[in-house]
Image 1 (cartoon, rainbow, N blue to C red):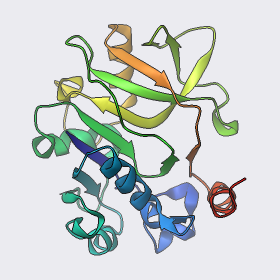
Image 2 (tube, rainbow, N blue to C red):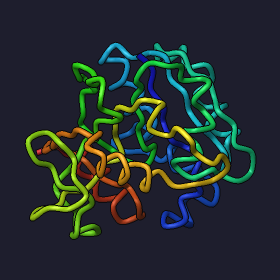
Image 3 (cartoon, rainbow, N blue to C red):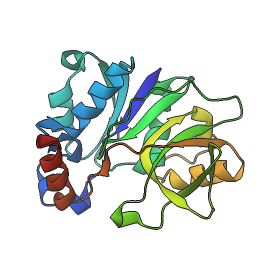
Image 4 (cartoon, rainbow, N blue to C red):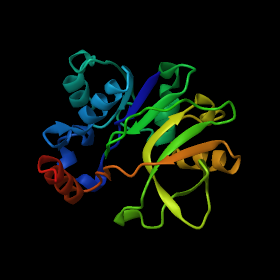
Length: 222
């Protein structure tokens, strides 16, 4: 099994930190965000990693190299100077990801998730990891009922930025830059999404304030 870490974004809300450092190289508890993902993926037995890059991509490539010092193998999907958004980035990298289901992880989240999953049924296009709604997304994104993802429901949860996907999810995609969300919505309408709730530590590290709070928490657990 392979995994893709989405690391191409500009990180506008994290400025001025991301004016000179790409968001995945910001540190939590003494380690970069991308290192945390690599270590958890490796612990789950996933060592073939694809990382898409655009903004300050040379820094990410120089820091991670081929992944050998982290015990994984990394290949890069270079999007040039303009990131292709979540959907476009995944679609461009599909030739590197192969035909089997693969994990996708947003490079700007921190999550205590173990990446262990039995697999996708024949009719399932993706399995989403949801989390309780944080303060910055109180309305939620998706409903979870009996293991199935729905677009509407009495209680919506937030998409964590972590999912197990099939390449077929993006069948017919237009190429270029486009968001992932509409493709997930369509799959949910067709009953092709499953999900789970993660109640352990998770954060969308979207602002300097959230970064500082999480860093303090991880350096001083308990």
